[in-house]
Amino acid sequence: MTLAEDIKRIRATLWGKVPFISSLLGRARIVETESVPTAGVDKRSWVYINMSYWEKLDLLCKTWLIAHEVAGHAAFLHPLREGSRVPNPEKQPSEHMTWNISADCAVNVMLEEFIRAPEMERFAVTAETIARLTGERVDDIKKMSVEEIYDLLQRNAVKVEIELDLIPSCLGEGETVQEGDSAFGGDKSPAEIKEAWRGFVARAYIAQKTAGTVPAGLERIVNEFIRPSLDPRALLRQGIRAGLGKLMISDWRRPSRRYPDLLPWTRQLRIPTIWALTDASGSIGGDELKLFLGTVYEFAKHADVKVISFDTRAYELVTARRPAEVIPKVARHIRGGGGTEIRNALEQTLARMKNRDIVLVLTDMCIFDLDQPGVQHLLTAVSGRSSACAFCTTGRETLVKGWRVIRLKS
Image (cartoon, rainbow, N blue to C red; front, side):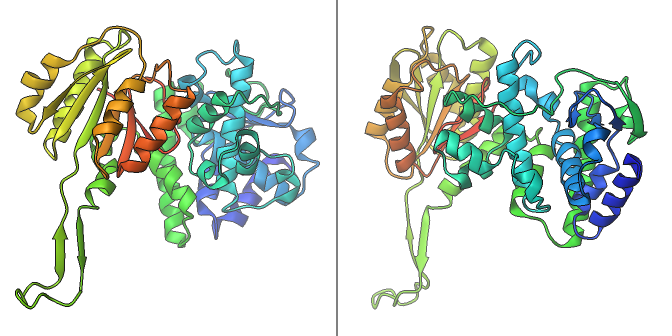
């Protein structure tokens, strides 16, 4: 049976229960080649299969492999997304290996919900693999994006070797056995490829919902993937909703004899303060600072915002109680220009904040003392007291335990 016939058979087998994968399998360009040892995906999202290896597999293993490459790496743009962490993978082989490991883990976590192939899983990178290497909880790793897993491995200086299936260039060698969608022709730009896959993933997700079974892990991954252009400030507002939602307690206790008409009994809690620790170091440019002030402006519409600017030290606390105070009060008092150390700002925040306040760090994530044990202890303490906390970054998206990491864009 040829590779093309195998793929048609696999798609037909999966369509009833796993239309998400079946739908995506029909979109990719698939090439038969001897240039890869097993299988791989290049930056155009072309999928390459080594027939000598393929023919040794049974149908279940073939299904797992093609789903891993197409519905995992190709559809979720892992070769293209690598640039956010590894600018030149051909000249950074160690970092490229770490990215491949991270992408494999994310794909295999998704596949666990749909296809189990013990023979393939024996050699696969799983959340359990990453947990053993880093000491993180398996459940936490399963919720991480590829970028977050990569940052975790880098922070722990993990070095593991696997057989690579992310090709850092455009291979193009071999015989095309499935043309796939025209969106993946040889002259398409990365932006066109990204837009095409986002549309196909969205349609495949709808097909899976129609089938009636959408695992929570898939829903999270797809939502993160198909809505990357969401206004970051809207995302921030969504991120603090949990904190704002804890402001009212109500129950049906026996009413007061003095005020019998008050049912249900309620108690109004205070509106939380939002703490904005604003990076004003030398690495922060004028556009980034404007973006930080715009974020403070947004939150001043909802609650008091206390701003502490910092570089190697923390400066005076400034409070904005409404948006109109952001420019005259906050902007004029932001100071800095040196290096970036967050310890003093965290110490001030922890000493002054109240339980269930919300804490945001506005930064480019180039924080020199972030990995120091004392700073890690302060981050844990602030996270424990807050109702919501996040690093809002214009640069790297470094994983910080207990904190959400949100990309800020102008």
